[in-house]
Image (cartoon, rainbow, N blue to C red; front, top):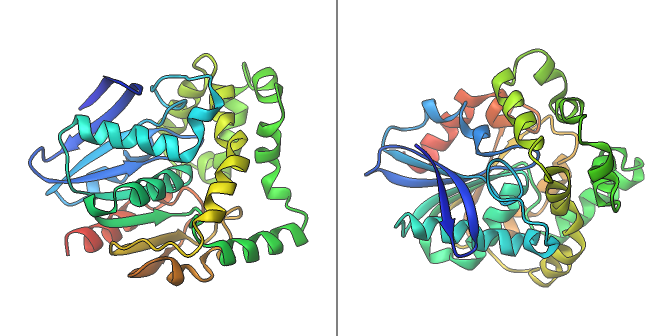
Length: 286
């Protein structure tokens, strides 16, 4: 149920499991993870769902592409669409977490007619210019300390020079207390360390952040665009990076959206997999 697909855009690792005749549910992971981040939640999902979870370019076991322009989120969305097409899937449910939530939004903008229902988890809504500005103003007023890792990865050569050999320390830092106490499974963190240890990953992973300036110019032009499909914003409410202000005004960005909170930090699907699965099941297969 894990396969490598060699496609025109590149080579991608994909988890494909559940009911092969079920309703396709495409799940897109974020940084610094891989499609393994859905392993904890998958056993609790409705048995009528077919889970398709690709590793994004530059992460997991997908190809390490050095061209930074390949990490524009619109380009990563094109990767995901090609993966979905190659599996013969037409219409599907869509979930994205962290950077995967941004890629999922780009997928939803590109092929809205194919997405039956849409879930965004702990990431800004890219068309929410007003709410995102309010969030940033609040974060910068406090010094923006929580953005340090984004600035670090944007520096030329630094991630490539300092992370190799220190992947264990680097990855474990981001999973914090939940990782140390086993709330997030140790085998998951071990898997992210393994993937980050693959040659060139510190650079390809940093490209997600190095592309932000170009991404931002595109998103500024999307102000006022609305996601037409029924949507859900699922929020782990103890997130210190994606703060609550990012939820301001999101109702203006969707034709139909609800917000559900769970008691969790940023990696909510790994901290509270059963609760997250229950919310997804109720939304997708009521």
